[in-house]
Image 1 (cartoon, rainbow, N blue to C red):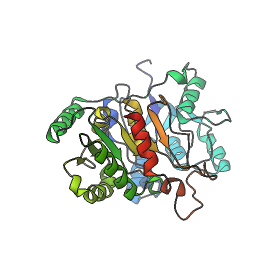
Image 2: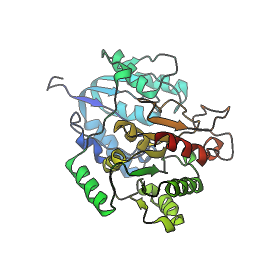
Image 3: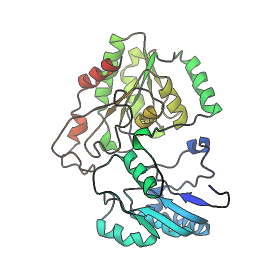
Length: 330
């Protein structure tokens, strides 16, 4: 890419604030972190600060590869000054179709997507190829860059808790959407059975600050196994979390970032998958390592607009079925 060409690639971080891990990626020069919920709700000073700040930005091109756009994403793109803005026509999962079509005028060039179902990683390849790239989706591999600090923290905590690579498993009970959670009682059942059958292993509980309370509840319920359970939630960065996943024998997680991190570092993983976005975002890659446990219902594909009082597709996943997948990996 010519040094004089300034391109802004707009990426949405699925409902949470952008993290510091992007600094490790050699292809990213600068990250501008905007919290979509705060911007969307128009918190007075926050909103007007970013309206002004975005307008001051000037790029040769703005590229927005998000397939399921919404009004906030489009408005942010509109505010940034640029000679050329490229977007994906996409679908109306997060928006009303006619509204999205109207906002297509915010872009100079809108890429028309193939009107067939594709996994998200295939959509990414489609977008790049229609820009002129030549990507083979089968050859795509996700990647995480680790810094020296991530490695140092992994070694330090590993020594503190006597963790041996390949002799512990990770669990990630939390998720950004509460509707996608698996009941904490079933996590307890799973951990109890696993440690009962595999006393030489340890269990590392991972998660961010938002999951700390839930994870503590799980660990405290198994207080008699406290020498075998290490709760690291809320105390380490996302990339350090990924480093612990890399050293694990396997990870069991809900449908969240941890499961994608596992695929990126090639750690066998079991995703507890509900029906809201079934198959769109996961699994991908090596299907012998990236496994899914689900409870099939007729309402699959609801985009998490659940017709029940509680999400039965998650609540009815049996811990015995999850344990069976663990044994297949072991």
